[in-house]
Amino acid sequence: MTEPEKHTLIEDAQAIAYGSTMAAFGIVILTHLGLVTGQTAGLAVLISYATGWGFGPVFFAVNLPFYIFGYLRMGAVFTAKTFLSVALLSGLAMWMPQHISFATLNPWLGAVLFGFISGSALLALFRHGASLGGVGIVALMLQDRLGWRAGWVQLGFDAVLFAAAFLVRDPMTVVISFVGALVVNLVIAINHRRDRYIAT
Image (cartoon, rainbow, N blue to C red):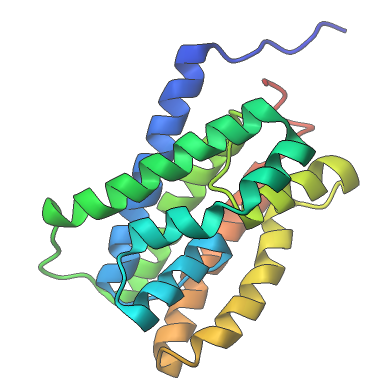
């Protein structure tokens, strides 16, 4: 059996650029609607809502402790790619709102669009040995070591985070937000399969 073909440096670079940019666009949709989400991004969004601090700097700071864990468990290359992805997302999340606006955006549709966009962004990063830090690192580690689907692991964390979201958002907003987070995790759970996607 031949070894799977490895991604080139250019392929990895475009995946990080695509994944980070689409994830930032998803955050623009999310925060425009005042919604919340799960994972480390969700934690940063909740802190941002509660304090008034910008999402970008908060997201970057929240991820800092996870790089040591990522390095020890996933290696230097994964950690470097993840750091670049998080830094790019943080910067784009501060820049994009100055250049994108929505005249009309239904919250339910916005939540689903956020889920599809963010799910595809995470898939691109995962398939090129990167993540958006935090819970994504733990989820990928558990998937690789124990066979647990990354999407389901993140969904469990999301449940705890969404319980906390009721403290800063009204119940209907949290319900709509949960739809978006569910779509994200379903996209990952269904499409991120090591036994089907073997390029590295």
